[in-house]
Image (cartoon, rainbow over all chains, first blue to last red):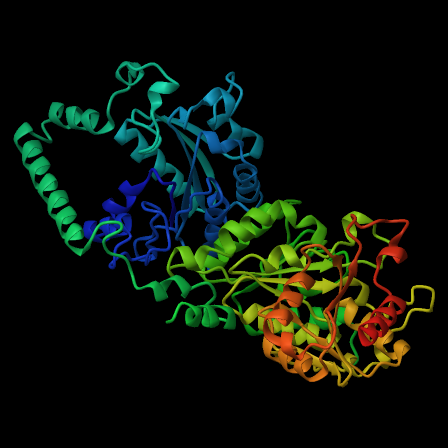
Amino acid sequence: MCFPTYRQVGWLLARGYPLVKLINQIFNNNDDPLKGKQLPVLYSARDFGFYSLSGNVGTRFGHAVGWAMAKAYRNSDDIAIGFIGDGTTAEGSFHEALTFASVYKAPVILGITNNQWAISTFTGLATNQDTTFASKALSYGIPGLRVDGNDALAVYSVLEWAADRARHGHGATLIEFFTYRSGAHSTSDDPERYRPKDEASLWPLGDPIERLKQHLLANSEWSEERDDEIQKVLDKQVTESLKEAERIGVLGESKPDVREMFEGVFKEQDWRVKEQLKELGL
Amino acid sequence: MIMNMVQALNSALDVMLGKNSEVLVFGEDVGYFGGVFRVTDKLQKKHGRHRCFDTPISEGGIIATGIGMAAEGLRPVLEIQFADYILPAYDQLVSEAARLRYRSNGDFQAPITVRAPYGGGIFGGQTHSQSPEAIFAHVTGLKTVIPSSPYDAKGLLIASIECDDPIIFLEPKRLYNGPFEGYHDRPLKPWSGETESHVPEDYYSIPLGKAKVKKAGSEATVLAYGTMVHVALAGILESGVDAELIDLRSIVPLDVITIEESVKKTGRCLIVHEASKFSGFGAELSALITERCFYYLSAPTIRLAGWDVPYPHAFEWDYFPSPDRVAKSLKQLLED
């Protein structure tokens, strides 16, 4: 099971989650799989191994450890992977999760996306600048790896190593993925207010997709023609999915039945919710 | 079999560990040692280190790990050594356990049972005596269960473990070894003389959200839970008032029907809890009574609670609602 942050929608797409469904969630429309109960982009997709997201950072890091322990308890070789951002490593939940992961040798991969910016806060406020996030693993007695997060092959191999380690009962691995948040934190954020305008263009480690492309081109595993072609196919797929979701309705135009608001507080509705449904005339 | 509340809780855990391999029991000192109050005594030895185990001193970590396991499908029963220590885990309980089912539209659920000894009367000072039920009752998505006898403790704990919603199970620690009536200067009374200490050794459960009429009466209704059920009963007897005593047993879900029926019948209501008064659970009960029974009331509802101060060590018996105060409040209720 993957315990993502809100930066990992790519995992959901890589696992074949339907794009229209994803956009329906963003629109909170009638077909929203989460029935209008959650903020856009905070997906949940159990069938795709994608744990429920939340706007509270770091609170699910320990759930990854618990899930992994449950799998170990069942003698399954399933493992869990949990992610956290650089800024959130300052939260207690980061250290609690590492403590439990190391004490119980949980079959879990714990990742830190170090994109160097926590909204407007640079990493020097999340940890002392004389150390790395990866080195925090040492004090917990587990391996800590630091990898170029924009090198797709390096990311793949380090994860493969950690997954193998977890599956063989050797316990948790902490991995720091060093990268850079070139965009804004969110659609309501303006990075120019706290960092130089040209900072993103000066980032030396490049775009991970472009780098992978160059690597494959150099090895003759890929061609510009195929690249153009897949780009067109994907653009079309995204545009069509967007149109389909728009037909169902965008935010404010379409939403699930208001009865949904009262579902799922508990497994079964209690008298309060039943009375309040009546109060709403439902 | 005669059991005190500790033995009844231990029996509930033992039965559930034996019945369902998805039940795990863990927390600080609960494994090898058997818990500081002995509730998990011998469970590790009997069921093994993978079923009942010790954890780091990390309440947030205990609850987070438990939620992850519960989301996967296990049924963790987590002990927080004292309810006073639960606050580092409050974020996990409120932001995660209580919200997981709702925000994921049922994709994931967190059926954890969090056991925590709560309440005063044990000379424990502020950090071992508080009654935090109101801070859980306000959280949509959490259920809060509070037994008052060995029989109820076992049946309600089993029902809590089997429930698919997250449960805060508050154990009135002053009642662990006997039905404390609030007379701190009298000799300790053991559970063995009480009907409710007759506890079946096997499986049974008591549905959540069903209050118990502990004593029938016609002149007033007294609402209480946990230790205060016994204090209230002693106070009723002391007062000579023919009051009906209702043991709520769980504050969420709340058995509002039983409360409503009783208050409509008696026309007067006294609410008793240990926690401080302002914004305590009594405020919710009082509001519900006003909303539902106003035209049946002959007197304003009285809340008898801890004073609005932190739990004061040297002044424990000045703070703790006593049978005398219950009797006095009942007389006032009848005079109003």
